[in-house]
Length: 200
Image 1 (cartoon, rainbow, N blue to C red):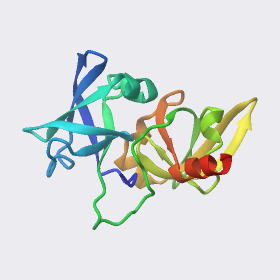
Image 2 (tube, one colour):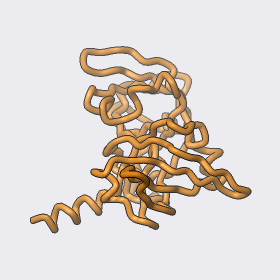
Image 3 (cartoon, helix red, strand yellow):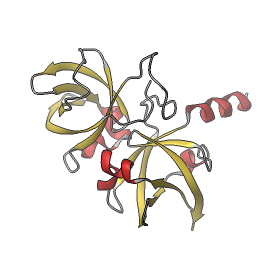
Image 4 (cartoon, rainbow, N blue to C red):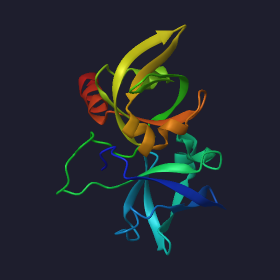
């Protein structure tokens, strides 16, 4: 489990093809400082297992085809910087919200509106995910815990907005995502359980 509070921006330094998967070598000195093989690290919101910890603050991890198909990691060569977070420990404050690292799908940035103290980012998403998103609720975007500041639908396209403060822009990769760029989305797991229970 994760909190959506990014610990550092890492960089994918190598991508190797495997049968039905890829192996990534990622530089992240903070998250590797106490990492061991088998540990979980969220990479831009995707929970991945550490295969090896290497010198120089690097680790390797395998990404299976299903994960590549559901996330932006299939395009990691285009944007090699990634948000990194270690799994939460029981003695740590839950500063964001409950994030599993199980990406539900991707969204597309359709506008960025800067202001003096923050930037409003509008993200389009499919209707299957939009039903779980509520104003003032939580959502993880590329592994960053954010509060939904607006919702809407234009010409049949669902979208939501998040307001990014300077700290978020400076300490995550969200400042680098261009308009028309894709991001990983994980909706609030509680909403999915509530829907499942009510449907029965």
